Image (cartoon, rainbow, N blue to C red; front, side, top):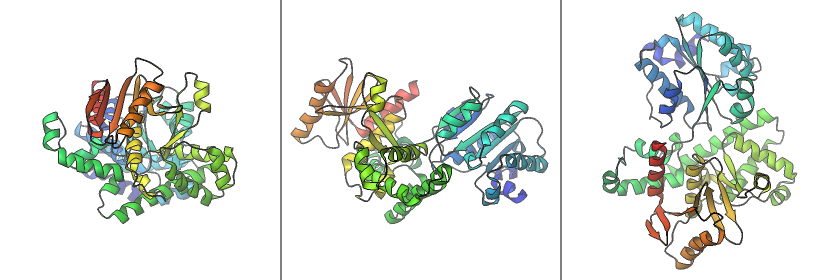
Length: 425
């Protein structure tokens, strides 16, 4: 075990971790002086470990002794036989203490902690009896909502990390978008980056690779790894093949309305089981359902759901493949809005509005040049606007103008505007 600890903590050898900085780092830094346990949740391979290591860099640069910072990835094969025993977490920690003999406050980073059963009991016991600042990462939402908060109510702060968003992708490519002048100057590079991001999403290892076949292989491997490591063992699912087939089948329905009856007949299982399986996909951040708007919460819960994937890259591994540019654009807009809107819904009667967030209504239309398309998208606002004070937006691939009090925005303008709003909060 000693060798593993040394290998995973290169900062003990006075080395810092190299990585592309994430926007969530500032929030993580602001939480470091606080007593609460910091949890970082997100889909596998989105960069949780990297974000935690960026916090290590910050702590060392701030004067914290390297030996007082301990990082361990709990999915190491050496720990496999011990995952049913949360006390083994203490064995790991005690080995660190013997190795480094830290004095004073310790910063302990447990990576992919959900690998161990009943880990939350161990964290609670240490939290109440020691001067340890915990940063823990995990790849399922239940880690936060159902497990940790039950034992550590009010004693944890969560950071949810998504795959790279578009502005982080521009930062990675070193394309300056900091002000209007640079956006105009670099508009061609931004447009190329937009096309790439719409197609392949924000997984770092995917956009690092140039070969499109390899990109797809990576995305398929990610999806299967999540299904077989994070869902099947956790929920003791016997028919793993059907679960996998359901996920890839659902990728063909992205941006559409789910029909549980049809799914039930297709997979020869009950509606209840289908819904449970989709819950599991949501729990590990693969997919997300969206309610139809209704003033009554009970009716929203019962409503027909639209479904989205939480990274555009997964659209590339659907069996239908995704040359549907409108779906790519709508899925990306969903992910942008989903990160800032707690009650994101859609409106539908004889017409449809793609998204409602508070007092904002959004239509997504890749190309508005066709007059029938233009009329359909704009007329929906007048037909379905449930609140006269709502502001109306149409998000397009590249058109920007104001038409009859409706703001038509290109995807880039929409993203940069959202970024400015978030910075001002």
